[in-house]
Image 1 (tube, rainbow, N blue to C red):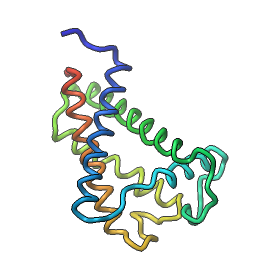
Image 2: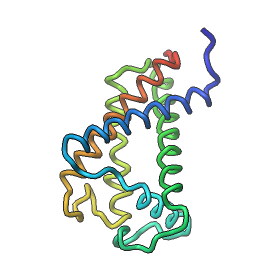
Image 3: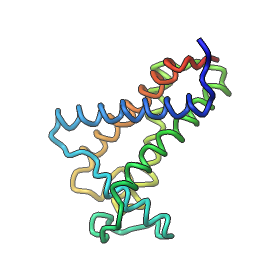
Amino acid sequence: MRRLPPPLAILITGLAGATAADIGRMLYQWVTGFPPVNWSITGRWFLMVLQGQPYVTGIGQAPSLPHELLAGHAAYYTISVVFAAVYLTVLKLMKRKPTLWNGLLFGLVTMAFPFLVQMPLMGMGVLASATATPWLIIGRTLVHHSSFGIGLAVGAMVMGVRK
């Protein structure tokens, strides 16, 4: 079997991770009844960052911006592909092949971004501590990122990534 060019392998691996994360989030919503991520809010924040306003005291109360839902989805898939590139680079540098274990571990490490950067800058606090439902948000994020990491590993395995 011919190996795919690295950019295509990264793209497919990232999309596999995002798809697995979406499935994990849907299962979490089904089990808990907790609503899914609002990609409009995420898009609003990313658009505000691009406009030079990274900190918002309350992203939910900030005025809506044109195309924020599209921006939210674009940011989500872009970040998924960037994280896939990091995961595959780490595997290559460490001379490791993808496994469910290292995929899960990588997914858990990626939780640092929403918990320590994105949520605080959106006015939600570290670990969603300034929200009404921090534990449900933490749970959703844990399931989302765990599923994402496992999806990255499966995507990399399917792409034939080797040591």
